[in-house]
Length: 97
Image (cartoon, one colour):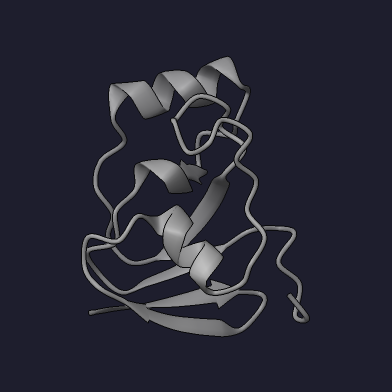
Protein backbone atom coordinates (compact mmCIF):
# COMPACT_ATOMS: atom_id res chain seq x y z
CA UNK A 1 0.00 0.00 0.00
CA UNK A 2 1.00 3.61 -0.61
CA UNK A 3 -0.20 6.62 1.33
CA UNK A 4 -1.36 9.69 -0.59
CA UNK A 5 -1.68 13.07 1.09
CA UNK A 6 -3.61 15.74 -0.76
CA UNK A 7 -2.72 19.39 -0.13
CA UNK A 8 -4.22 21.76 0.76
CA UNK A 9 -7.34 19.66 1.43
CA UNK A 10 -5.63 17.59 4.13
CA UNK A 11 -7.19 14.33 2.92
CA UNK A 12 -5.17 11.14 3.27
CA UNK A 13 -5.80 7.89 1.38
CA UNK A 14 -4.07 4.51 1.32
CA UNK A 15 -4.17 2.81 -2.08
CA UNK A 16 -2.73 -0.40 -3.50
CA UNK A 17 0.53 0.04 -5.38
CA UNK A 18 -0.16 0.35 -9.11
CA UNK A 19 -3.36 2.38 -8.69
CA UNK A 20 -3.81 5.10 -11.30
CA UNK A 21 -3.40 8.44 -9.56
CA UNK A 22 -6.58 9.83 -11.15
CA UNK A 23 -8.57 6.90 -9.70
CA UNK A 24 -7.07 7.51 -6.26
CA UNK A 25 -7.98 11.20 -6.44
CA UNK A 26 -11.58 10.28 -7.27
CA UNK A 27 -11.62 7.72 -4.43
CA UNK A 28 -10.58 10.50 -2.07
CA UNK A 29 -13.65 12.47 -3.18
CA UNK A 30 -11.58 15.29 -4.66
CA UNK A 31 -12.42 17.02 -7.93
CA UNK A 32 -10.28 16.24 -10.95
CA UNK A 33 -10.97 17.31 -14.52
CA UNK A 34 -10.80 14.76 -17.31
CA UNK A 35 -12.61 15.75 -20.49
CA UNK A 36 -10.96 12.94 -22.48
CA UNK A 37 -12.06 10.09 -20.24
CA UNK A 38 -8.55 9.43 -18.89
CA UNK A 39 -7.13 8.82 -22.36
CA UNK A 40 -4.08 11.13 -22.00
CA UNK A 41 -5.44 13.62 -24.52
CA UNK A 42 -6.93 16.66 -22.77
CA UNK A 43 -4.28 17.27 -20.05
CA UNK A 44 -6.93 18.70 -17.70
CA UNK A 45 -5.84 16.43 -14.81
CA UNK A 46 -2.53 18.14 -14.08
CA UNK A 47 -1.39 17.99 -10.45
CA UNK A 48 1.79 18.87 -8.55
CA UNK A 49 3.80 16.11 -6.94
CA UNK A 50 5.19 17.88 -3.87
CA UNK A 51 6.93 14.88 -2.31
CA UNK A 52 7.61 11.32 -3.33
CA UNK A 53 8.97 9.52 -6.35
CA UNK A 54 7.04 9.03 -9.56
CA UNK A 55 8.01 7.51 -12.87
CA UNK A 56 9.74 9.62 -15.47
CA UNK A 57 7.46 11.56 -17.78
CA UNK A 58 6.74 9.63 -20.97
CA UNK A 59 7.03 11.26 -24.40
CA UNK A 60 3.24 10.96 -24.79
CA UNK A 61 2.61 12.79 -21.51
CA UNK A 62 5.18 15.47 -22.38
CA UNK A 63 3.64 16.03 -25.84
CA UNK A 64 0.11 16.15 -24.41
CA UNK A 65 1.16 18.76 -21.84
CA UNK A 66 2.97 20.86 -24.46
CA UNK A 67 0.05 20.70 -26.89
CA UNK A 68 -2.40 21.75 -24.15
CA UNK A 69 -0.10 24.41 -22.63
CA UNK A 70 0.19 22.67 -19.27
CA UNK A 71 3.08 23.92 -17.10
CA UNK A 72 6.04 21.52 -17.21
CA UNK A 73 6.11 21.07 -13.42
CA UNK A 74 2.65 19.46 -13.42
CA UNK A 75 2.09 15.77 -13.99
CA UNK A 76 -1.01 14.24 -15.54
CA UNK A 77 -2.91 12.15 -12.99
CA UNK A 78 -4.20 9.84 -15.74
CA UNK A 79 -0.60 8.99 -16.71
CA UNK A 80 0.76 8.10 -13.27
CA UNK A 81 0.49 4.90 -11.29
CA UNK A 82 1.13 5.12 -7.55
CA UNK A 83 4.14 3.08 -6.41
CA UNK A 84 5.29 5.15 -3.42
CA UNK A 85 3.93 7.48 -0.76
CA UNK A 86 3.14 10.85 -2.35
CA UNK A 87 2.05 14.33 -1.41
CA UNK A 88 -0.05 15.78 -4.23
CA UNK A 89 -1.47 19.27 -4.72
CA UNK A 90 -3.92 21.00 -7.01
CA UNK A 91 -4.73 24.69 -6.77
CA UNK A 92 -8.48 24.03 -6.59
CA UNK A 93 -8.35 21.58 -3.66
CA UNK A 94 -9.22 23.83 -0.76
CA UNK A 95 -9.31 22.86 2.87
CA UNK A 96 -13.01 22.01 2.53
CA UNK A 97 -12.69 19.81 -0.61
